[in-house]
Length: 248
Image 1: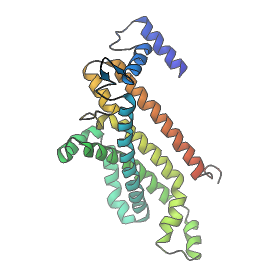
Image 2: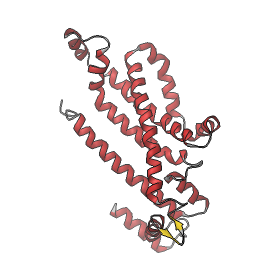
Image 3: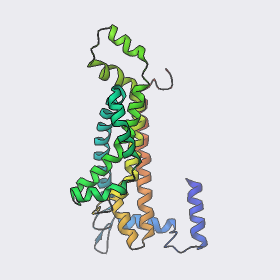
Image 4: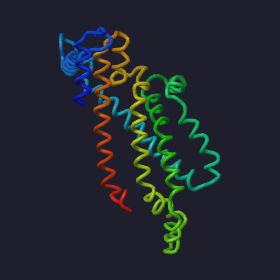
């Protein structure tokens, strides 16, 4: 990080390109101060402080990811356990997974308007396939001895998916959740291109219209820093929930 910061500062200091193209670290820091305070009667950026933009985006990411993770786990279990469902739903999940978010965001706006619904739905659709694929592959990789042992101990057909298969798949599911949240982060800027203020993506989009590159860079750094923090929390949760991973 220090090396990247030094390279950034050096390139900006040479003035090879205008600050419209490469803003200096000092200019980005100045925008951090401006967007976090009230100045000249202006409250932050667009009437909202930077942390309010971040919280609005995180709320959308959390809601979309929660819906996507819940739906992806259920769908992945069905695909992994039922061969007919695998044949019918597997190609559909792959089809949705390959679609770029902006390709169907306009359709969601037509269906749901420009409020929160299309944004949450977009993040849900983006987050669901990685979890579904990870869960389905994990289910297919569960050793059959686990299932045979559970049945010999009296487990019913209804108990096996939740009491045996799902815990055995938990490490791969957590990996899929991490990927899904990352996809939601990369999609949030697209989700907030329409009526996205407050929101980091909306702030970036608005600043881009006025060539405020320093605000754009600030928004990107904010998303990246918060993403690193959330991924670290996922790694901590993984160590607590599946301490046997890599050991058994």
